[in-house]
Image 1 (cartoon, rainbow, N blue to C red):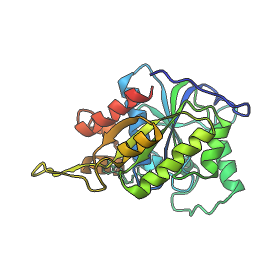
Image 2 (image 1 turned 45 degrees about the vertical axis):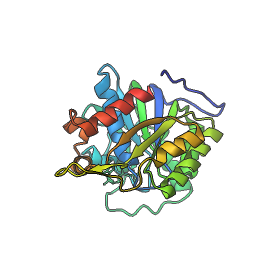
Image 3 (image 1 turned 135 degrees about the horizontal axis):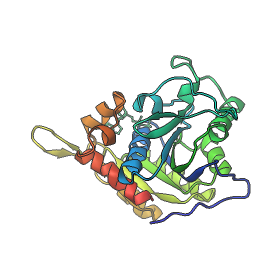
Length: 262
Ligand code: ADP
């Protein structure tokens, strides 16, 4: 399905960027960043003619540098814009590049907003077909500000099948609707664990909570990602599964989701 960017009057596109896809979740730890990273890689793997970027606006807990095995100071372009860092063919920008890894992030309010402004407006992306944005969890000022400042083609919401995560995911979906960001659908993460030895499947966080929520909210389910050791290890070692094990079932799940969002 082709998605259209819808613009509110205040919104200004990011220079050179055709489509912005935000990845959001109601709460932390449900696999939002892992999905954002693998979705960016999958968009690029599915169509090598597309230029893909990844923007981490999870200012309190940026995880893109680690997951994409990147660190360092972005260089400045002639027009004083920050150049994204590149790995696995994906142009990446993160608050994590701009602050010391060990520095506590104690900014609040205005400082966070000025950081967001920098990440949205002072990056030289060149030409991108897709920019995947890793949002902070929840429905706070950052999410609202991003949604109001740039035209967003669509939001992908990640949830585990647990009630608590789903309740928060629902709030997320409702927030995007209020600010006229089309919700592309839900990704159900960690719904099933298959024992590598006996192949028995266990639904650790419940079986199909996200599917039920999707039905209630009239949203599509974009895909199901299993709880799998390889996904966690691949992320932790900075070799995301779609890059390092593209033939695996786990990677295929992300590759399928990528075909659903564009
Ligand atoms: P969030 O961005 O929602 O806080 P992360 O993407 O950082 O969540 O994921 C939290 C932890 O769970 C990370 O260690 C990540 O590697 C792991 N993880 C995420 N999705 C999966 C999965 N499907 N299988 C195994 N581990 C996962």
